[in-house]
Amino acid sequence: CDEYYSYTALAGLVRTADEDARRWDPWELVVEAVGRMVRNGDVMRADRLKQVMQDLDPTFDEKNLGMAKFSRFVTEAAERGLLTYTRLENGQYEIGPGVRASGAPVVVLHDE
Image 1 (cartoon, helix red, strand yellow):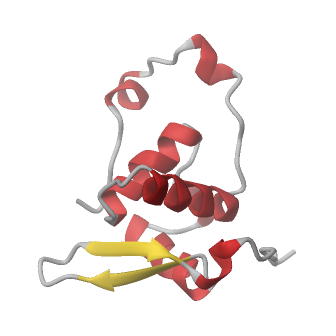
Image 2 (cartoon, helix red, strand yellow):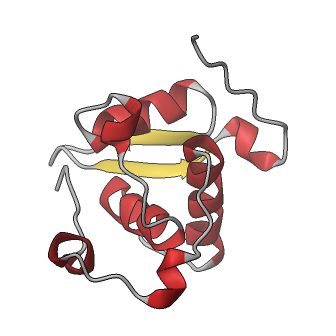
Image 3 (spheres, helix red, strand yellow):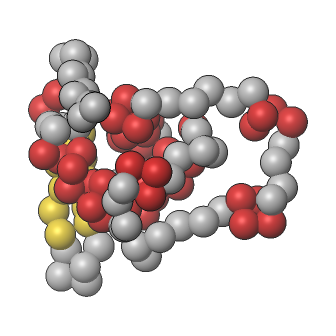
């Protein structure tokens, strides 16, 4: 699965609590999501990562960052040291915590 869309997002259904949900910086969000996955003993795959990220921040969409696929977001996060990944034979990405996810500050540079 390269893309995951929750049914509630597709149907336009929003819970009242979601309206006040925190909007995360995507790079902080990925670190938080991977950390939660590790703590919960979750399946460490990229498709599950996106689900956890969207649970934390329903507004997250990699397309808002100019990335056509979530796999591109995963590789960018790995380049930033926020997670590690291995591409499996079936094409899925197995992920793990990155070197910078251990509490080191994350510096995100934006082009103006």
